[in-house]
Structures are given as C-alpha cells and as structure tokens.
Length: 244
Image (cartoon, rainbow, N blue to C red; front, side, top):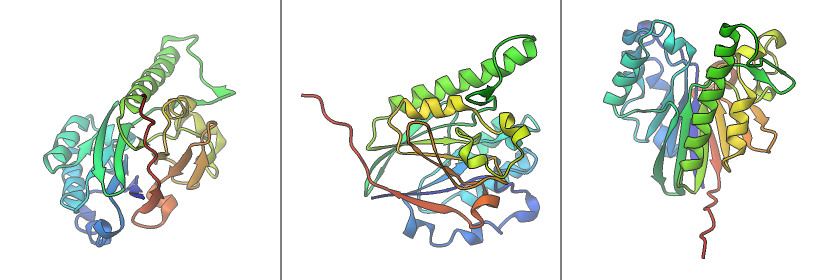
C-alpha cells in the first residue's frame, strides 16, 4: 500500500510563518510522500516562498510540489522554485520524479496546468491571436504533462497539477469561471498514461472527489475544500507487466 498525502492552496505569507508547520506533526507516520498542489504563496513573492520552504522542509518524507497561479503573480516563480529546491523540496513543471516507498515505486509527474474549459464548453484555437495563444499554451502544457506521465517507470503513477483536469471537482464554483479553473486536456493526459491518482487544487469552492472520463480518481486537495491540514490517499501499487 502506498500512502500519498496532499494539500494545495495554503497561501502562506510572513504572518503565517510557523503556523502551518505545527499542523504537520505525525505526517511521516501516516504518509510516504507529501504533494503540494500549487498556490503555496499568497501573492507570489520570493519572501513568501521562503516561508513555504521553511514550513515544508525536513518533514521526514519527500515533498513534491507544483506552483499555482498565485505563485506566478509577482514574476518571482523562478526564485520561489529555487528556494524550495534548496530545502530539498522537488518542484515539477512538465517533468516527473520517481520515489521509492515501502509499498512500491511512486512516479509523480507535475505541472501547474492551465485553463481552457471542458469538453463541449471549451475555448478553441480560433480567432484573435490572444485567444489562440491562450488555448495553445494550455495544449502545450498538457502535452508536456502527458509525456512526463508516460515516461515514469513506477509501480504507481500520480498526476499532480494546480488547475483541475475535470469539472466534477469544481461543483460549487460559478460555472462561468470553469474555463479559468481547468482543462479537459489535463484529463486526456492522465487517461493516456495509466495513472492511479490525479491531484489538483485551485477550486476553493469545489468538492474533493471526481473521475476522469477514463475512470481515474481525481482529488481536489485545495485547503478550503479539505478543511484539514492534508488528505492521505492509500493506493495499491500495480506494476507494469514485464514483456517476455
């Protein structure tokens, strides 16, 4: 059994220094890895990134993160990433990492993701260059995410994003903003790679549980949705068959 802890949208700043850390006691006893699903800072400053690094370093389990839209707000995403990595936190963007655990090898691919909407009600790459650029960026991000998932050599593949891959977990958000909360292209990437779990944040007023069209479990781990410091999901490892 592989135990995956996850949370997103913690929105830390200097005033919260030390407060979140106090809620992580016992994490290493209940999980093999902690996933952070973006919006780690409040306004995306490097100083807030330092707070995040201090809160999540040295927890006794690997910590793997993606950034969210808030973490890009002040154009300090590179500094935030460097600060997290300096404290041993893995930050993914269109790439993946494989970790050993007592229950098997965990492969995690991650991306912030992007908006665009969902099947039947999504933007198309047509018209003004601004619209075409918006849709094209989402498509490119999802393509890199899917390739990273497929390249993972692991007993369990996990997809980590900030934006939502399905609209199921957005229930409770205004439908008018769904195109800015996620994209069906992320779900297509997940369904094309034999993924066991997809984790995202971003939708504060959404719900925790959903499914991709291909039947992959999706979990919205935004802190306002979880209403607990983190969720733990337990999954059986399913190794790939060996060709003979």
